[in-house]
Length: 185
Image (cartoon, rainbow, N blue to C red; front, side, top):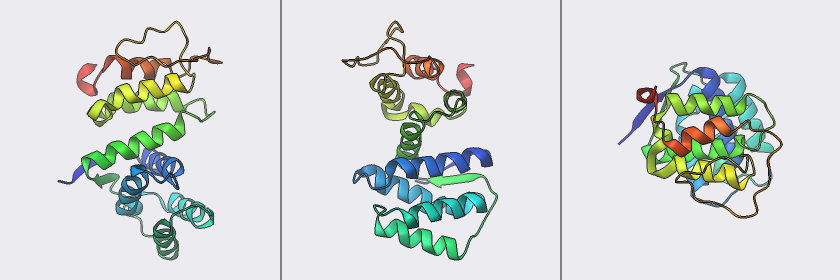
């Protein structure tokens, strides 16, 4: 069963390359799932993003050969369909989003945590298969959540330290509390 997800162009141009940056060369299920979503939706990224992503993949020594082939083909023949609609298998979408999130939680860009708060409100697929509790736990592992923040149902992790700031607390709370999509507003 194929599912669709409508996103703003800026979100498409952010999420797909972020997922690739995390998944490329990991040697896990993320490689294949992200590769499938990106391959099937390459034409939905803006031409500039397609070209940048193709160049990044082509020049990465550890990128899988299959990814390099797709990137070279896409680079040689950029095709853009501004539908702003991603098509994917439901599980692959979750893996793609989780990969993009794992890439983004290491970003120093100040707007990234707010972007993920918005995604949490707009994309109910973020709550599938315990994605929300895994995302919250990953924020703990990365020491991005203050020590005094209540954990709720999130599994505690050891050796946490106080983060430099609390930028991710809003997203953490949404994931911890399961404030699911638009109907939770």
